[in-house]
Length: 188
Image (cartoon, rainbow, N blue to C red):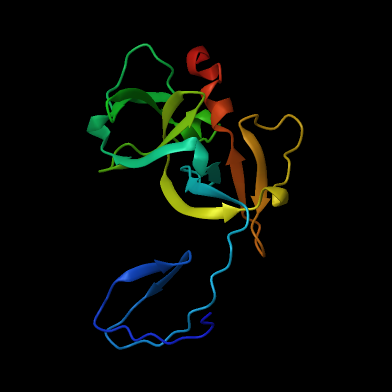
């Protein structure tokens, strides 16, 4: 097993992702050590943000696809909940696209006046819904045993939250099933 090795990288300006860390390569050769790969701990989640800056996560197994969707691809529909932005064709299947932040009670609507809107297609029980968000974060391993429960009467769509180390920032874990089965889609 190699525990310390040196690599020469030349003539590149690209940013690359190595084990979840971003670093930039310059024109000069760079030496760096290769650490032994650790086994991931926890479950794989997609982290993303709503317009107010609140960070949420969904288990990767509840996500069908993540896409950038131009606003003109989202077809508005009359007489539906204001939480629904419209419909899109996702690989031959027509699905609703909602403003996830507004659905969760975020005071700021998602900005639809831009070239592309990040949409997370969530799936549970054979149902699929496109959730428009402000921006996509990273895919990360999060430990379920570190999930803190929320207080009573909290949002039922949130299973709990993780406290990020050495910061006040939290990541709220969502339940795709609770979101998809919510009566709010027809009662607004």
